[in-house]
Length: 369
Image (spheres, rainbow, N blue to C red):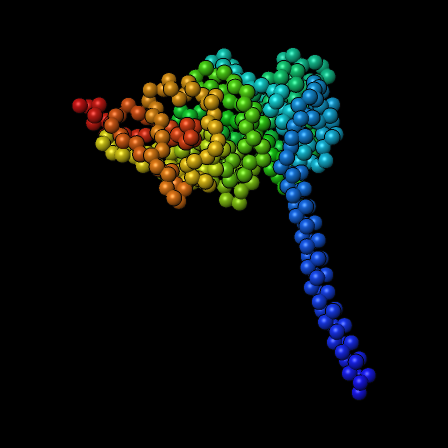
């Protein structure tokens, strides 16, 4: 009986020790796995979002040959996303936007735009390659040249890319009757999915009245969210919105004009949703913005925002916020006391972010008096 008792005590003790060690081993295993997952996630996020090394290397590469340039821009990259980034940043750094004067420039086909001084060898190449060679030679082009150069470099790097044509809301005073194809951008394929980007708009912007190009890199146009991108880029082929439910044409045309600074403040919603506000003299127009963080943001305003557009136009008013609510809505109040104002620029942190068309309902009767 004593032996049986001692053996039972030993069995119970052994089981207790085993049961005591099992949670420790399990906790240790979970901790190790968790640490590995966190490390892998941080490493993955760093690899996907930090392009400092890629940008620094791409900046000092140079060649007038698309094949050579593509090879040198991608040979140090670790994956296709870095290759796309390297090509994109090189273009935005080295190519300047050129806008031909509409009165002097006649409409020509893409195949004819760059053939005047192309050599015999270049003339035998496909149009995209020929345009890429000419752009690399001149170091300036328009939106189609940006898009074709990007595709050419991607082709040489073995990365699928497409040239997308459509309507981009570039002119703040454009009338709806002028809605037509006016811009080119790109779609690129990596990580088993298509992505959008616009090298032209990322390179800088032109002033409204003088037409001068200001070199100013805008990170937003590198792989933007398709739903946000569709607010100002409307492709001829709606499949290239990359959205399951693309916005209707009328919905796109009648929304407020998004200024260049709209994307940097995390604006998630706005009211009114239509771009034209009807009001009578004596009315007070209410406009609301909803942001991710509220009114206070530690972001400096764009000091090189097109001052000509802001301060020379007498028919525009620049409306600053009156209050910031707890639900992260910023409220604007504009008293309609004149029939001269036709455009409302909505200011946020001293940046213009939205523009509405103000239509005075009783303007005709006022003119008649």
